[in-house]
Image 1 (cartoon, rainbow, N blue to C red):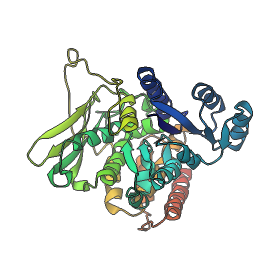
Image 2 (image 1 turned 90 degrees about the horizontal axis):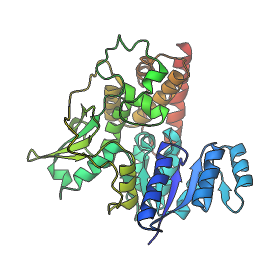
Image 3 (image 1 turned 30 degrees about the vertical axis):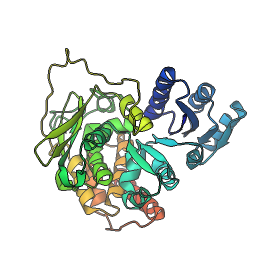
Image 4 (image 1 turned 60 degrees about the horizontal axis):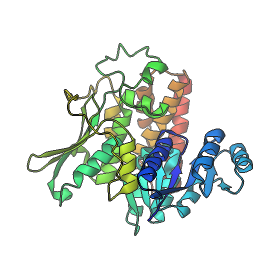
Length: 384
């Protein structure tokens, strides 16, 4: 039976790797997966090439000029503006959209009772109170496409009663390109050095987040939202080899870990095939060459964003949305050369200090919180 796949953010890192996973699986089992829909922002040439290779039924383009160009170059394919339209023609929707823009796809996929392969952590973090009730929709499944949360998902499957048996979730962090550097040493870092991740090839925003440990902080909030584990029982440990992707410690002292060589193809394939495993082996370890696995605590003094995420998560309400929005603005300013790397945390601190304590009850509330936080962050960046 063919699984119909829609890819939101098809031209990005997750999107293009999803195409590769589908191709690998279809080579082993022809017709196992069909890519029925794609969405992107404005990357016309990449989308047109994907349409020619995949023959989807529908394409959504956010940019109007790009939409008209794709429509002209891809006769016979329905081209629309709203990425939420992808949900109607899919069994599983891969949400690889970067940032808050992925919220609509998350909500509409769950609302439709479909499987959501979620790589867009910001939508769950910012809109947790709104998204959570939708997970109870009959047929809805949320399978994380993230190396750490996919690892936790797999580890938790080893327990018959996770609510009773789990002691701690342990998220591993590579430490990014600046591991073991002091705050003084990082005062003048360049964009190029922040984008030079030692183990993962990712988009610029998430790579900068990895360098500040904001990515790990947001993953802490996401783990809380995904699995209902309290923040006091979610820990972060630095593991530079990025082979142990996360661990779960159980009440009897056992720790179950998921290991593989670093590749996003594995969690993508896990989400596409769930509850079964796909047949293509991604990330297989050569145990004759893997000589060591190191672990150390994170430097919370230098990498302040980690504790900011714990702070926002514990505050709840719209605080995570404010933090996510502030961070997006600050990272964009850093990538544009308008603020220093160590100012990313400063901007987030200043924005959280002005949080209004609101709790969202609708998507409109979440959107408003995001917009308010962005305006404040932009004002702060402008002053700097």
